[in-house]
Image (cartoon, rainbow, N blue to C red; front, side):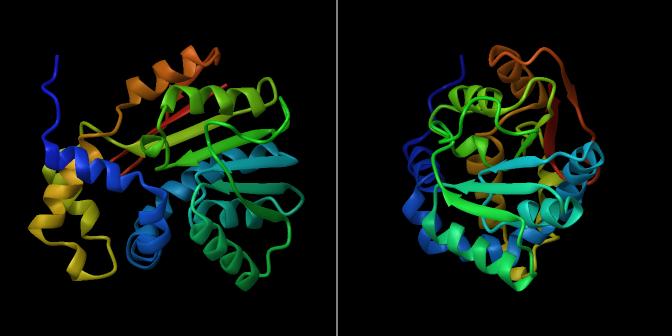
Amino acid sequence: MAPPPLPLVRLLRYLRDNRLVWDLCGFIYNRYIGDALTPLFVLLTDEIAPRRPSRILDVGSGPGYLTCLLARRCPRAEVVGVDFSPRQVSWARRRGNALGLSNMTFLRGDALHLTFPDESFDAVASVGSIKHWRDPQAGMSEIRRVLKPGGPAIVAETDRGASPGEIRSFMARFKTPLLRNDLLLWGMKRIVFAESFTSDDLSLMARKAGFEETRPLGVGGIPYVCVRAA
């Protein structure tokens, strides 16, 4: 059994997952970090778009990076983004308006209690969000509930097994050198990556949620794990 986390780690993990922190400080991620995940957003879109879904859900949509990409690639689909931070929802709406995308909606909501009927989406995606959920297994079950039978659910999250070198290379993608120092590297290692999941963890949660098939998707050059479930 792993030892309990240090009090400082527990505090920082609490802050990492706190809605008010995202309301106040989410702009740091939006402005300086989010673009580093562009290859991952493209990977998910390439998995979903060829299926020509009519309705797509992005759980934990943040400032709308993935949601907007899906809406652009699937212009005939309705794309819905859900996030627990009202400020992030507001930023996402502004992003969509600036891009002139009219086929998507952003809502404030709880991943553990999605306000949609059963089997109401053709595809569901979630990137970098599930580690913040109070009960990740319950959230995975909600994804399964709102997804139509046979539709893909693609969940990506920071890789708990990532090496310090991989994390440092990822940080080199951030838009400002102020976010590449050793203190942030410590926080990324101990608070973000070490408190996250592996590909096997995500696959196991998906199977417990009722998905019959799972397979990992390769994420080249980014220390994230990604699993497709159906």
